[in-house]
Every structure is written in C-alpha cells, then in structure tokens.
Amino acid sequence: MTAHPATEAAIRVRGLEKSYGKVEVLCGVDFDVARGSIFALLGSNGAGKTTVVRILSTLLKADAGTASVNGFDVATQAADVRESISLTGQFAAVDEILSGRENLVLVARLRHLENPHAVADDLLGRFSLTDAGTRRVSTYSGGMRRRLDIAMSLIGNSPVIFLDEPTTGLDPEARVEVWETVKQLAGDGTTVLLTTQYLNEAEQLADRIAILHQGRIIANGTLTELKQLLPPATVEYVEKQPTLEEVFLAIVGGSHKRSDNGAAKSGDTSDATGTSN
Image (cartoon, rainbow, N blue to C red; front, side, top):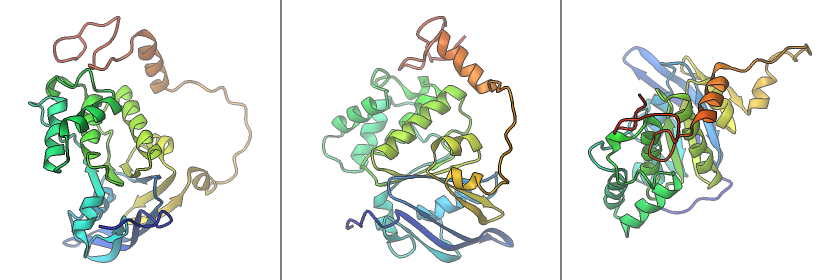
C-alpha cells in the first residue's frame, strides 16, 4: 500500500448501482469526499445509505459503477481498501464481558501492533474512558459504548472511517458525546463518511452533505449551498423559543454532569451498572 496525494479525493464514487432482485437500491450514485473532511450521506430509512457504505468497505459488490477509497479501487484492490479504512456500524460491536481496555488490547493484537497495552491506554485517554477502562463494558452507558466502539475502529490509524448512523438509539447527551468525538477525528486529519437520518446531526458535523433519495443523490453541497436552493428568506420578527433538546441539555447539564464512569457526579443515585434510578 502506497501513500496518495493530499489533493486526491479520499473517496470517489461514480455511477454506483445496486439492486436486490427487482428492487433498485442505488441507481447511479456519484460523489467525492475530500481528505480530512466530514461528509454526511443523508437519507430516510431504506434510501440506500448502508448499501453505499457496504460497497465502499468491500463487504458488498456493486452491480455497476466504480468507487475508490484512499486511491484504491474497491473492486480490484479490496485488500488495500480494507487496510485504509475502519467501519463502525449502526450498533456498537463491543464485547460486554471484557473491560474497555481488554476490548482495545484484543483489537490491537489482532492488528499485530506493537505494545497493544500502550495503544489501549492512549485511546482510553483520547476518548475520556481512562477511569472506566478496567470496568466491564456491560456497565457502560450507551454513549460510552459508542465512544469505545469508535476508539476500537481507530486502532491502526486508518485514514478513512465510515460511521453508519452512529447515534441511532442514543440519548441527547450521548449523541453530543459522539458528535464531539467525530469532530476530533476530522480535526486530527481523518476522513469521515457519516450516514445519518438526523438532519441536525448532518448540520452540526458535516463539511458537505449529500441527500440520497430513491437511490440517487439529489443534492450535494455545503450547508450554505443547500440553503441557497430555497427561495431567499424574508425578514420577520420571530421570538426564538428553545427546543426541547436545548431545555433537556440545559437542565441535565446544569444539575449534574456525567463523569467518566457513566454516572452522575451529584444529585443522582446509580446502581452498579451506571444507570440512574
């Protein structure tokens, strides 16, 4: 595997097609993802987002079209593609019997890295899981499990990471934790392709947003560019009211903050699993 120029797109997709029987899932998908950026693939359930990720990660073959990741063709250079990527699916793929640290050490050993314990300790620190590192993952909160899952996917410093609906089923606090993690990844130079059905998630995170609908990309651009597709806004006086999510986070964040072990620091009682009573 060789390095590729920084000016080359990290992901390039042209005319991607995929059908399951008579059902057309992808009908000629095209997009590029710049290196070190966050690209959100936005669409409703069944739009084909996961199918795109599965093709790009070499888990599924396209019926037509081409795609490259880190300069490698997904069809003819699958091994090189797999060395270049990490994939985090819709559900955290962690071993609940093991501790967080043991999960990380296991993956580091499978990737044949030197000093897997040091790798695990570094990632625990980066993802604010050091204090919980020796605890079984079964005691972790949803946000902590997802952070651990993403940390595991980063072992080996893959230049490209796929996050397939990473915040599905998480509460507002956990979702914000994952958002901060994704921002940090891009800040460190990792290319992130994020699939989501949450509009605010794409708005918060993405440098560019593509809308996938009925198997086709029907819009692709920055948030500013996409807003320009609508008629110019009219100026009106509107009293802005806080959203329910803003109210929730303000109340919870003001009364007690989550600590590293998933429990509240004050004003809360928790059982041994870190769930609130």
